[in-house]
Amino acid sequence: MKDYPDKPGISRRAFLGTGAAGAAAAGTLAGGDANSAVESKAKKKYVMVIDARRCYGVHACTVACKAEYKVPLGENRSWVEEIEKGNYPNVSRSFLPRLCNHCDEPACVSVCPTGATWKRDEDGIVVIDRNICIG
Image 1 (cartoon, rainbow, N blue to C red):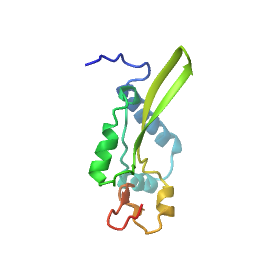
Image 2 (image 1 turned 135 degrees about the vertical axis):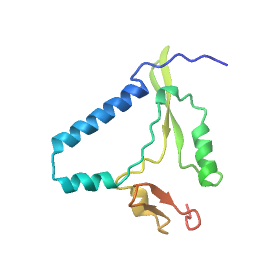
Image 3 (image 1 turned 135 degrees about the horizontal axis):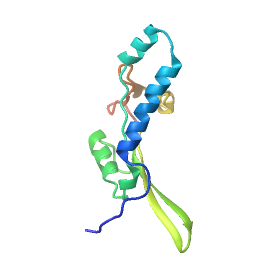
Image 4 (image 1 turned 30 degrees about the horizontal axis):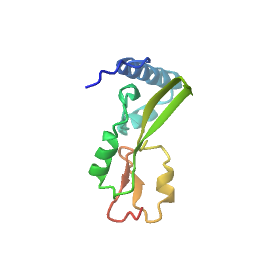
């Protein structure tokens, strides 16, 4: 098996720590009343963190997505974008997994012709009903 050197950048632990510190600072600076603080704690918001430095373009995430959501042949709900930087002979290539971002205001929900896609109020996850989806 080929050994890949770590790509330069911030570690996952440092990234998550910085994000947590930033969120705490934003909450402190925002102030607000006690009711808004209680309301924001009541709703869960899930996130997925992907360390792009460890992605080598094997498309395992794409295969897993297709299997989990029973995506038909020839269609994808996720993909891996290949990014090339520089000019020959100093060219570098990296891979960037592109997945559903579970946006705050997802465009896919508003354009779905059958209503098969919606955002759950309790956790913000964008859901697709495969039984009525035509896409």
